[in-house]
Length: 74
Image (tube, rainbow, N blue to C red; front, side):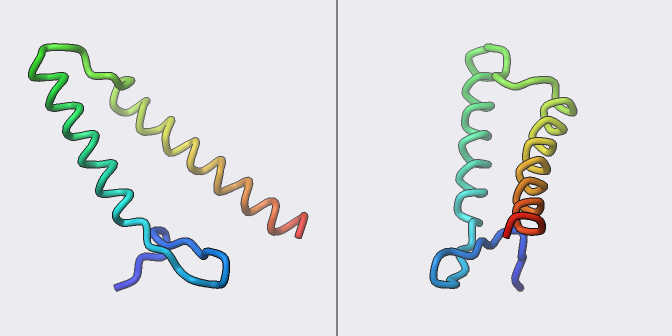
């Protein structure tokens, strides 16, 4: 099964899957959360929903920029 949002076209038309980056990021986040909780420090993240929405907004802004460039400046 191919998930297009996890693939990126590289030079030469090759498709690179980014699942490893996603899984490593998740693992790093789990490890940091575990360690911070174990030593009773506050988590280094904004409130849950606000933080997630901020990240989604950043991603959408980047995707919108790419769309605008391709549609109007190519």
